[in-house]
Amino acid sequence: MPRTKRLPYIVILALAVIALIAFQAIRPGGQLEDVVGKVIDGDTLYVGPAKIRLEGIAAPELDEPLGPEARDFLTVIALGKPARCDLTSERSFDRQVAVCRIDGQDLGKVMVEAGLARDCPHFSGGRYEPFETEQSRRLPLPGYCLGD
Image (cartoon, rainbow, N blue to C red; front, top):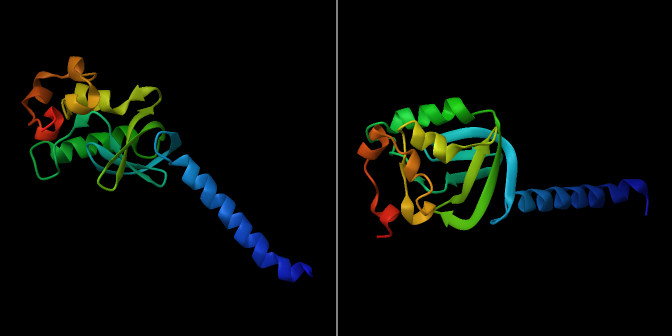
């Protein structure tokens, strides 16, 4: 087969390999290492192509008190930085659920310590409860955090 006729097959093969690598990088239960490209709110961000819900915390929604502050704080500590996420096999709406770290710091723990998120014991097993502050304990605790 002439070289020019093989080119479309080579391109298709290359694209298939790239797609397979991307799929493997964001498969549930695996690990994802990439740069934080966007922060949606205090517990949702994009790590590479994956929309991630931080496991085990509940940050206020953007229309609730401290919601914009939670988003802004997560933006300052995460945006543009390399993150390592341990993906669970869970999904929350259109998001994969993960524990993410930047420079070894658990983002969920950092958000709770900053008073901008609550421990969500139904999903965290209580791992962030020791880090709650007076301010974080004043945040509303969604019913799903209690297993309702």
